[in-house]
Image (cartoon, rainbow, N blue to C red):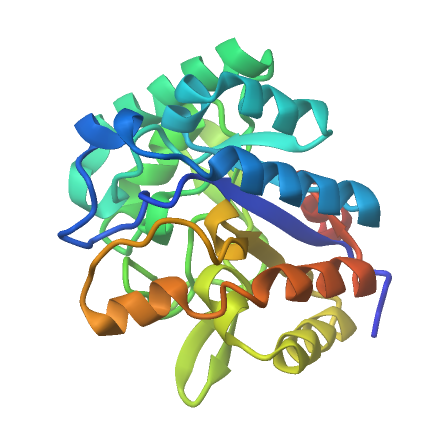
Length: 281
């Protein structure tokens, strides 16, 4: 493998009940009263990053930063790059430009107030910047001072996806001569399906497959971005009663994800999204 390429590791810091487009998911008004596993699992991930000497970008959900401020500070104190995952975990393609602006602005205010660091990048819940949304979404992010985005799923995705999007890190031009750096979600093909290096795919896919596809990208000089949710490494977290196909996608591989992630961090170079973008430029 090529260890010259710096890949990007990222944690979408959200809890077990932040699952999208499932009718049985508790309403936001009820979140604060639910048992939480985000602190113990994020701390476990931070420990793994420290053990392997890996960098990481933490895409903090604003609601999490507000309700678990000590955790948000620990993410920052661990040396993670601070970015935002929005505030209320709503799909960009559904809520429109004004609500997205208000949601991201609120998350920035909360995260900066808690950590002392202003978020520098953004990841949309569910990678939900779609073809219809991208004309305005990147303008909103640039207006709010974001330097990078990692929301585009360059293929077919359950919550979004842009089939013809550039799959490698690139600059997006916005009005006023501004640019936003994009690190799209790294995808590969499996039986004609677009799969990513993270989340449910990290839990589901065999380690050998993940390793081989990352090696192939790195040999071509292309970095990948891996993402993980704290719940992905916790087989004991509370479950939501949902239809079987979605239940499988949400809970398969919870016993194996942590060990797969450890092996990836030990065998490849991983840093923050910004550092990876700089090396790739």
